[in-house]
Length: 274
Image (tube, rainbow, N blue to C red; front, side, top):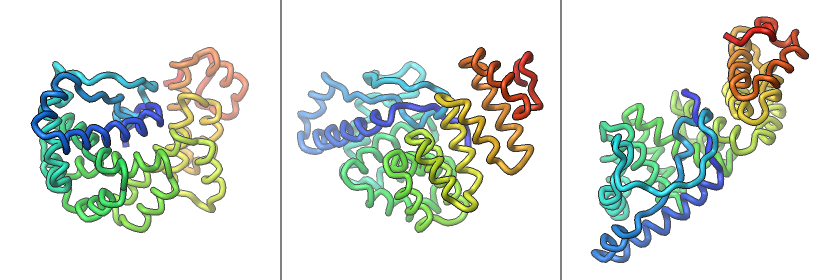
């Protein structure tokens, strides 16, 4: 799974509230809605799930009428999709999942799923469980990330339990990685304590925790590298952590390397990491 950038947890919760209000407005005001929303378009923060673990947190920004690069859905088209979703959410999602434009598909999925789960997550989870086997692979991964990953920001253990009980095969592993990635961002301390309480946790938990620690606690991330049993994987992960740390805080990273020569024997402090 690709590394992904982090955004504020509260931003996603606020996004859900905004989605619920906007959807309710569009479903009750008829033709008047189009005139009003043309004058005042909805706002949205940057997606938590786009390029996670690379981009720093960003505040909410207003939507543009349409992006020059086509990466955002114009407001009028977005409203049409959400109107359809208000009448038949599963049917609308089935159409969205077939869209060839990945940016457009992902943005529509994000809006519709956040709106659908703003008050009750169960219908969306039931739809996911039933529809997942027939989804295109890329779309299925996006749906899992936007539903299970978003849930794990608030209740990682509940999300984990649902995945374990309801998903099988490779999609279970993908979903558990999404839970681990979100939990590492939301509460790395609690996640670390949970990992230590397990007899033999899956490697994905330690790997995702390390990635979640890199932006704010790189020294702690280095400590967790020692938990990786595979020597090759451990060395690669240590180098990735040091490389990221050198880019953000070179003096601190070099000082740590000098103080811990036995931890990273493959890297000398006076040389930048490979």
